Length: 248
Image (tube, rainbow, N blue to C red; front, top):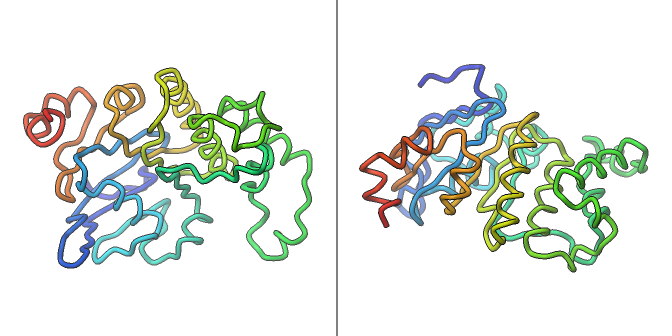
């Protein structure tokens, strides 16, 4: 599939090796506006490495990553964030000694310059944005609770909120429902469907029930490459996927 301006993200021929091992091998992937794309695959398939490459944490050996007409492989991590790419990691990294409100406030963009950050003052726009995000992530009643007292699932939501408050055009979530209860997983699926009104989301996940609840399209990776891609029903019926992943 050729790169096209309609895609928020176009990855072509992406390759990276570690000590001679190709963790990602000639990968091509295209994500639409307002899409939830889920990447699945066995351990070691290269899923998290793809996210690392997109956000600039790992540099590619070959290939391109174009996000909204910007070539990310030539940019630094902070530039990629400023371009509108947000990343959620497997383990929550909220500020546990601060309140939910303070965590969200700290994540609010304060301008792109040093002086913008130095002279930033809270205003009605910030308060409105924090309250809006807190409602979206089911924490409106916990705004002034200390983050360390939240449940594991609520901390996961708070970290998603810390990305949301920055209003990224692309959010990447690495196993966002790990350790959550069934109810929290259902709420997280609802949360993701809410937030794609204004952005695209890439999710790396192992929970197939959750994947079925959220995915517009599923990409199955194996040995650093795309093995299968399409609807959940399509990849579940693919005999190659059954052999290397779902069947186990």
